[in-house]
Image 1 (tube, rainbow, N blue to C red):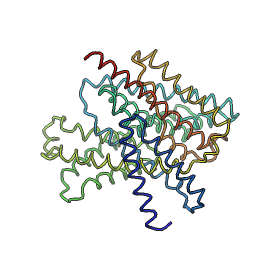
Image 2 (image 1 turned 60 degrees about the horizontal axis):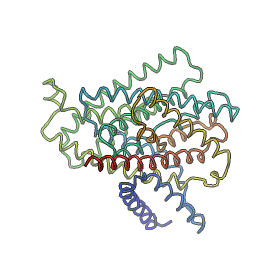
Image 3 (image 1 turned 30 degrees about the vertical axis):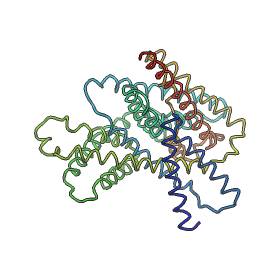
Image 4 (image 1 turned 180 degrees about the horizontal axis):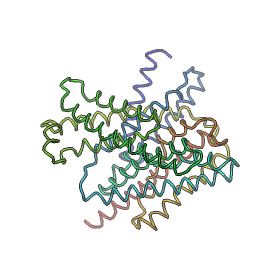
Amino acid sequence: MSTYTILIVLSGLIIFSYLFDLFAGKTRIPSVLLLLFLGVSVKQLVTYFDIKVFNLGAILPTLGTLGLILIVFEGALELKYSPAKNAVIKKSFFSALTILLCTTFCISWILWQLSGSDFYRCFINAIPFCVVSSAIAIPSAASINKQKREFIIYESSFSDILTVILFNFMLSNKHINVGSFAKLSIELATILAFAVGACLFLLYLIGRITHHVKFFLIIAILILVYAIGQSYHLSSLIIVLSLGLFLNNADQIRPLWFRKQFIYPGLQVDLKQLHQLSAESAFLMRTFFFAIFGFTMDVDQLQKWSVLTIGGLILLSIYAIRFLYIKLVSKTDLMPELVIVPRGLISVLLYYNLPPTLRVPGIETGLLFVVVLATSIIMSIGLFFSNRRVSGKEFENV
C-alpha cells in the first residue's frame, strides 16, 4: 500500500469513528460495535480484491494498552471526590471484586468440564472473559443519570485493576500459598507508594512547565511509568486511576505546605485542557484498536458450533451471576446495571498476554469476538429500552 493510501485509510477510520459516536448518541448502539463491524467488512474487501496488508495483529496489544491507559485516565479525571461518595466507591469496589471472582470460578469450571485441561490453565484462560471493559462501559454510561454513571465508572475501573492484579497473580503463582499473598501485599504496597510519588511529581511538573508543548509530555510520562511498572508485573493501572483522581481533587487538599508547592492559579484551566487532550487521544486509540481487532478476526470461526456453545455458556454465566448479585446483595434496580458489563479492550489485551503454553485449545480469538460482540449488543438493547422506560416515566410526570 502506498503512503497516500495509508493516509486515506487512517483518516477515513477517524471520520467513520466520529460519525459512529454521533450515531451511538442517538441510538445507544456502542460505537465500538460499529467499529468492529467496519473492521470485519474491510477485511472482506481486502480478501476479495487480494490486497496485500502487513500483519496488523502485531500492533494490536500496543494500541490496546495505550487506549486502556488513556480511557481510565480520562474517566478518573471526571470523578470529583467528596465524603458523601464513600458509599458508592465502597459499593462499586465490592461489586467488581465479588462478581469478578464468582464469574471467573464459574467460567473456569465450564472450561474445565469441556476441555479436559487442568483447572489452573482453565482459570487463567477464564480471566479475560470476566472483566468489565471500562473502554466501552464508561462512554456507554454517558446517557444514564449521574449517580448510576459514577457507579459504572468506578466499578469498571476497579474491574480493570482487580482483573489485572488477579491475572498477574495467577501467572506468577501456579501453586498458591501464604508466601504468594505476602508477595502480593508487598507488590501492592510498592505500587501504592509509587503512585503517591508519581502523583506529586506530575502535579509539581504541570505547574512548573512553561513550554507550549506541555500535556503530551505529562501523558508520555504517565505511559512511561505504567510501562515500567508492568514490566515488573506490577498493577500499574492503579497509578493511572490514582493520578486522574488526584489531579481532579488536588484543590481539596488543605495543608498549607501542599497548597503552596502544588496549587497554582491556572490549575483548573490546565486540567480542563489535559482532560480534553486525553479524551481525544483515547478516541484515536479506541478507533484504531477496535477496527483492527475486527479486521484481524477469522470470521470462519463463528461457524463452529463449539465456539457458539462455549460462548453461550460464558454469556449465561456473566449475566446470571450479575443478576444474582444485584438481587441478593445490591438489592437495587436491575436496569441498566445488569447489561452494562461489556467485554472489550482489556479482555483482548489479557488474551494476547497469555503465554502460548498456558492457552487452552478451543479458547481462541473467535470465542473472544463472540463474547465481546454479544455483550455489546445486549448492552445496547438494554440501554435502549431502559432509556425509553425512563423517558416514558418523565413524560407521565409532566
